[in-house]
Length: 499
Image (tube, rainbow, N blue to C red; front, side):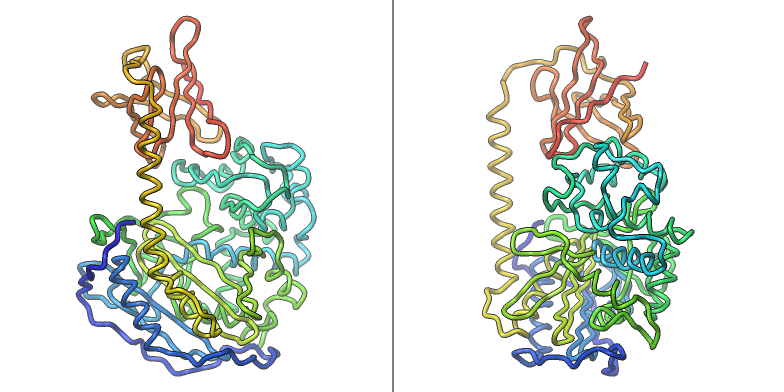
């Protein structure tokens, strides 16, 4: 993402949302353990304002709980660049992959109801469910789905390219190749969270969206939250998504999860005020507003680590980290035009939620600086650390582009005229794609996006982000297969030419 130290004109004064410090503490939670240092609102302000300038963010919302009480809710900047509508504590943002913790909670609710078991095969509940590997199909459980140990790499291309119903999406997972065996390693995977939410909804006899409303939003009093890009835009107070182009934010369309048959991986829209209720719930014992939402047994399960990724452990939609002597539960989220971070120190009943309307590093940097200050942990400034990391990443990308070009065999023309590659091509995961020619380039048309192909050598073409597309010819010299590299961890997908 482009960045500089030049400030971004937001067109609006900072807004401090009015609030009355209140307790969201659960009825039987233990007394909080004091953290190392006192809370500094001015330090949070300074972090947010500097990160907004650095990452060119139009609007931010921050909420903080300390000792189980709301001590800080504040909006900064504007909901949409070019407008004067200020962000406040009720402004809705897409929270991205923070949604995964909601999905873990929804599955746990179905376990409480006796409709699911964390450790019984998914196929017991979805008889038609299939994955690429038949042994994985027989053995994979809800716990495996939630712990990112399915053996599948990300395979994210399908959730941005192909319009599907939820049933179609789950049916097509069987055509996505794994790169590891079941439970061999941690591999973050959005698609398995889609399955987990789909499974929970089926177990409840509803959609996953209705299940979230019934078992999470309503009992926790999250009255403004929803799960739809269409619904958020019908509310009175929502943030628009932005991209950064030439160091300036520009409005982009909302990502419509439901159009792709997904959502339990990232579709929750929420506000600081609602997310503080959610974080307060996770400090307690499974109760909210005097009612049992999850049993103590299942409440413990959702925070219990399943898999490890280096020094971090992953529970059911929560990363479990340790800083000093304190356990920290956290998760970030990012999707087109939004990013977010929630972090929770359970033993001190302290938490922070940061939302913004650009897919930026701001939430992570602000939350981490807050955690380090609260725990008295000396640490380098997170904003500067990210700036340096982005610069290194840009250099790596530039070096990779040079290496890619140097490796090309020069003066190796295509075997056939571009018109010979035009046609319809089929893969069972993605359906039919259409290849057309525009000038000296080929265009591969998926439902929701196009890949522009530039000739590389012989019958191989490449996209601007260096995806490889190779046409295989029949003995008669006609293109019959199109190999597309859509997931770097597995071999290319083979699309066959339709008559």
